[in-house]
Length: 355
Image (cartoon, rainbow, N blue to C red; front, side):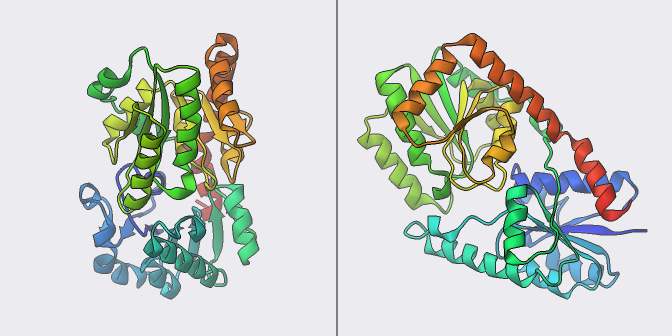
């Protein structure tokens, strides 16, 4: 029996890369292929330990069979050594590494880990049999490092994941007459949450005081940056700003349900899954045109070219006050979401692995 196994540096419930690996595992198993996911035990969330196996306990024996290994690469990890010493076909899927410059003065440890990750990525270029990337933006980075002919493999929108019932308590708390700005993602300096605060300041203070800003995502390890953001919100006199921290899936979907729009001012994204999720939930997306974001949105959403915070706030108001324009944006987004159907991933996997 053909064996195709995946490796993760970390596994967290709701994480985009973890969800992607689980989706690939399901597709491979549906075609009769033996497929498991391996991850360091200490970096696997408790709720995933039954379905994602500890690498040190299982991988040494698995590698004796020379299986195909698919390594999801996004940071330096002890998993790299397993990849290097594997004798079977080695496939690397690059999910992007955030440039370490964003983390200097915030977390030197994080910056150093990212820097080492880029070094590891370069080390693997000559032993990787098949190079994959989840966006053309990422594929270009691989080419610049020296990877040969990286293929773009599509991400998917996991509808079963998104069709979990949303939290009623979150909807009850936030779905009211207020205009709710939403951002979903880790509290991370490359995502420029301070720029979202600045846009919201102009909207809240000069256009619509009945508005709030919802930041949904973990700030663990980024406490220094989180404290800076709270200070900025206080200095701006903003009262209606919420930082949720890590939330359950039901709560996350509750925030999507309660939101009016999604605003992203991130400067570096390899894909940005929350953009896709927002389009699925029919929330108008406003996003800074940087890195892979234009590629993810395609011809949908509203791309922001310049960091003119007042102008962005006014643009958001124009869209929200114009039902025809708003409906047209949402309709285009709904069409774009179709490009992330799991069938596209299934067909690509069949081609890559000749199954």
